[in-house]
Length: 281
Image (cartoon, rainbow, N blue to C red):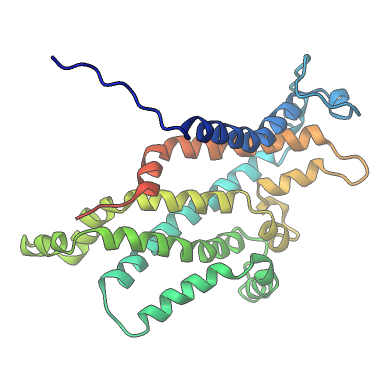
């Protein structure tokens, strides 16, 4: 007769769980305050005694946000920029990670080190050189001026991460595919690509958030054509130095957060497996 085993709890587990819960509360509180402020009436937002609740929720801030004539265009522009960055950086990083992992060539190690060094350069230090580069290329006031830099900044991290996933795919699997008559292209897209897809999802989250929340490039490269602006620029409509509309800012920020949450929900399962590891031999 098999008796049920008593569940053994480690002595430090309650403390670890309490610490994790406390950290989660601290991290989530700014988001809670943002959403709360979006629903607060103007009088409560401007009150000198802020309260972490409201008894009279209002949709006035959201009405002002969606009442902006260009808000829908800003939203679409952000989707185009983030979508192009995710797809382009993912495909390029996959091919580059495969090349530096499966092939031996001169300066391969130097190239990998350059990818790592590129991650250390602050974005702010490159904004002015990128401005002149986009100006000379005729890309100012276009979505291309936002897409191209974000692809460049996303690639080093994506290549380094995907390199581990490609390396974890057994070499014997590739040799077996060639013996069965598969071409290099067929192995690449029908066998290797599905195996490293969790890693691609993990890198796509980083690329999506970086492009979606970008304000620096949008402010620097979109100068006169407001039709090419993105959602972070829409926040400036509600922020005036003399009379800022904090309800509008919080409502617009809440609307900006929704696509990110939706994206996380869609890729959640693959994201967990992507962060957890790769295929093992």
